[in-house]
Every structure is written in C-alpha cells, then in structure tokens.
Image (tube, rainbow, N blue to C red):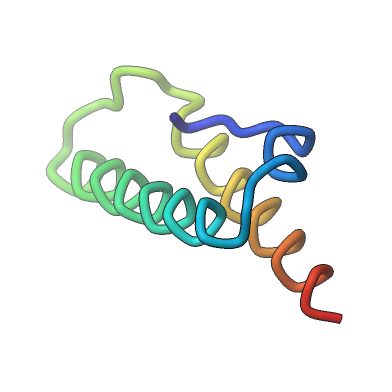
Length: 66
C-alpha cells in the first residue's frame, strides 16, 4: 500500500483517510525498523513512496479542514 495517488485520496471519506494514514504510518515504522536492523528493504523505493503518500494524505486532510 506504499503508494496512494491523489485521485484515490480525493474519493475517500474522512474516516477512510484517517484509517489509511494510520496504515501508512505503521508501514513506515516497519520499514524504518527493517533499515535500522541492517537489512535491506525488499522494495528500495518503498520508504520514499510511503513518506510521500503520508505527505499527500496530510496535505489533503489540511485542505479539507480549511
């Protein structure tokens, strides 16, 4: 689930956005732990994609609040 497009975020309900954000944060935590233990991530771009997806999600949440 590391990559979520902006179009997908727009179609989500606020509850779905919050759930997806939590899932992305958990995934990022797992990727960080995997890197910290000296292992290589199975998908080398997953860390970057997950961070960007979280940023997209937070941006959309903030825009909807205003």
